[in-house]
Image (tube, rainbow, N blue to C red; front, side, top):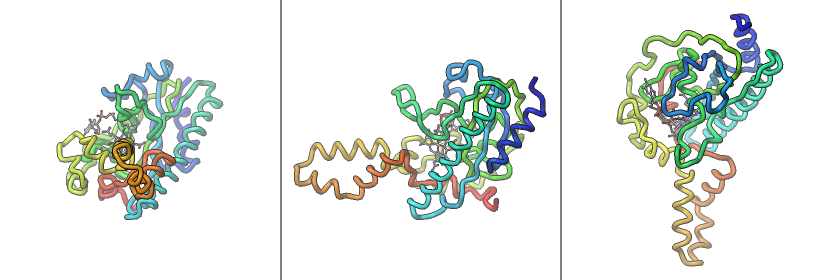
Length: 260
Ligand code: B12
């Protein structure tokens, strides 16, 4: 039987791993209209254990290697926690559970364009009482602020949701909007995806396609030189490490919770 004790046991296990916060959401309280239905991923899932991880100050650095290095450290930790918590739930409660990737892999079909996760972790965090949307369209955690990455474990326990955050956590200072070099947040309630992507991941798929387009139209002489450019080196690195962010502005400029 699922009791408050079950939640307590899971909460303690998760916090002992060094995770900053944890919340619970019943799948009936999760609503993300643009995301796939949970039944299509894991029909027996009844709840999600949602974890909140504070991002270290690396993301403030003007060195993109230090900033992205901090994100990679964090992503490695979140993946390890995902695996441990998934297995803990399976062993402790004799149920099935499945972790949700923090960022990728993503469905890259033309249906989603690689822009929609299997589970929207912002909507999962909202349902689990771990924060509320702010002007930057990110979730603000009540204590930890904006610089938080979320992950979730879908599982068969029919856990009740934690109480949702009521009221607005965003202070409407608009610093995030003004800090976006691409103007991607100008329209309230909507991130302009292409503006954000071109600026934050210039060496992603778009950058790669544009490099090879120029390459095929160039003479052999120019092609040789193109391999020695910063553009090629950066594209090459992004292919090795996965999505590589060159902008964290909307995330780092938020004044909330940064003393923790
Ligand atoms: C694809 C993706 C992107 C894409 C597209 C983002 C998008 N609009 O959905 C791009 C590359 C642009 C992107 C950028 C960033 N991302 Co991103 N991204 C994702 C990913 C993998 C999937 C998101 C998804 O499924 N979106 C599709 C659906 C769910 O979105 P949607 O319904 O259209 O909802 C949008 C709006 O309608 C609005 N919205 C919806 N409901 C409501 C309600 C209210 C009240 C309001 C105001 C707004 C609002 O907010 C959404 C943003 O546009 C998630 C991880 C995950 N699995 O959730 C991370 C994730 C959303 N990204 C994250 C982060 C941190 C970033 C960046 C800061 C990049 C960076 N350097 O880290 C920027 C922030 C851009 C911004 N301010 O919006 C974090 C957010 C953490 C947090 N504190 O909220 C996530 C959750 C990753 C994680 N595991 O923590 N991302």
